[in-house]
Image (tube, rainbow, N blue to C red; front, side, top):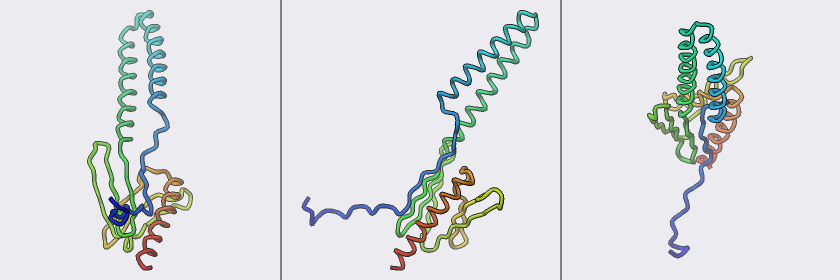
Length: 167
């Protein structure tokens, strides 16, 4: 293909973000924690067994099972994410639940506005995109500081999209 016949390159987005829930314990940390809990439970269970209170050992096993189940459910919820992209003529939001169910929403960036809920002591408690009577909550699993930073960057991108449209 000659340069004169080349297709126009895809325009880079004004803003693009993938938001994911924060998990402070890595998979390796989880394994170390579970091994430590199993070791403690085994030691305590062995002591109870030797004292003749052998039914207690089952409760230690049940504790390990329930702790592991709670962590697995927590890690499962971490599979959720949101992709937000602002182009000059389109704002798209893709939300994926922990089960993998996907929801896509689209707005025109010229008409879309960011609604920010603030609490005086906490900071930003909620973010929504609003346009033509339609509202979509975004960044729900971010903390107040992360929401503040995201709202600033996203607001600038929307303003840039409006300026590009008007100009």
